[in-house]
Structure formats: structure tokens, C-alpha cells
Length: 129
Image (cartoon, rainbow, N blue to C red):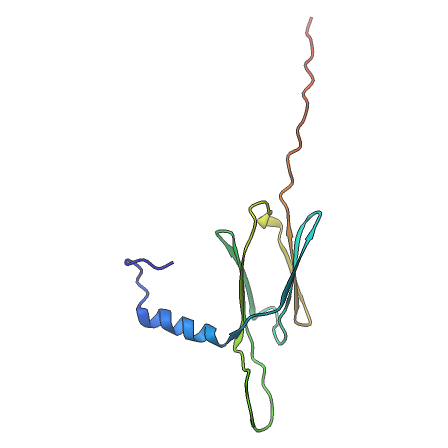
């Protein structure tokens, strides 16, 4: 969020917006399981060094650069992404210290486990003589 005291100039902010205009929105499936959520995202052409996953204030951000190079003369182009960008608001009941991410052949699998619930416990009272 920008405020009046932020040192970022208007030009820098606009440049970031222009860069993201060329980003593609990856296809994502989210599954709810007993232990939490599983997110599967299609990120063709991305390796682990190009992928950045952040969770800040309950928002999951996936951002990846691509460097797909095609040979030959370009005759017609409708789609030339420079990367991928997607955000999701996460529920509060996830254990963010135990998130697991795996990238295999351009498919990201992100496991977001739930916080272990504290089960009610009955405390036995002993009589002392």
C-alpha cells in the first residue's frame, strides 16, 4: 500500500504496473483436504529459481519470470507473457510455518496445512489426604 510518505515515485509504480500487464494468470486448482489446502498451479517454462512465493498479511502471492525463447521468424503473436502472477486471500486457520512447495515440470504443488487444533482436555482432580 502506498501512502504520501512512501519514497516510491509515481514513475516506478507505473513501471511495475506495465510489467505486470504482460504477466499471464496461471491456471490454479485448490483442493480442501482433512489436513488443509492443496494448491496446484500450471507454470510452464518456470524453474524454481524463477518462482517466488510469498505470504504476507494473509495474502498468498505467486510470481514467476519466464525466459521462453522460440526460434524462427515471428509471423504472428497474440500471447507473449514475461511471467506469471496470481494472488489469493488465505483463511486464518493455516499453519504458515509448515507450508510445503514442490515444482515438477512446470506444475507447482503447494501444501498449506491447517493449524493443529487444541483439543479440550479434562483434568482429573486428585484428593490428597
